[in-house]
Length: 276
Image (cartoon, rainbow, N blue to C red; front, side):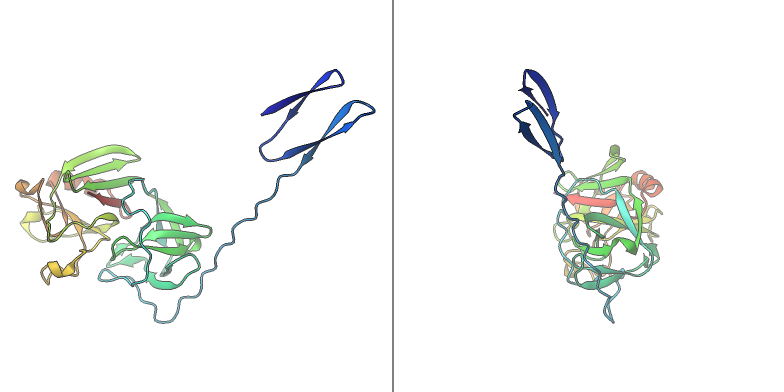
């Protein structure tokens, strides 16, 4: 913005910057205007909370369980793309807040699946990541705990439409009708992520690997004993009559050709958001 002011029959243009103020003083004897810059106020940087040492006996997150005490995902139904994931350098302590209490260790791999935890929040010196083996929870790690890697894909399951959509770099790449969890064993809502791929057994899976998710059944008691401790997954299904129906134990059943596409393109760490 510019202000213009006449001085002693002349015209002086004074530029006002966004980060500094101008103070003017008049010399009445000479009819001149002096402009003096006042430095902008310096806003102090926010302090970085320190990480307290992990206490003895801190549990390690496994495929079978995660520790309690982690805060809720602040945006579990967000469809904004998550573009970065954390790969821990080693066994990283996971805290309930920046500078808070360590609740569990996040290992470099879980049941042989390399860990890439999606980064869904940031604070000075800290990263908030989705916690696996528990639903809709995040944990905090110091930025020094691992390496940040780009995530270029996004998966969304719309339960009302019974459809899975795949985006790459923000652009639609695939859209398929799928089978979802039944009313008794629903597909868990919210954000989770692909932990990796695993083999399947049985002709119904069309001989294709499954993409294991970080999510677990919301009600494990609703499942048979052999399935209660498992994770939900994206897997092929060779009976096309299942698609468009709420019929699974919580997993997302895909047409075999669609599953082949995802297996070729979806790496660990990619976020899946399940919405109604």
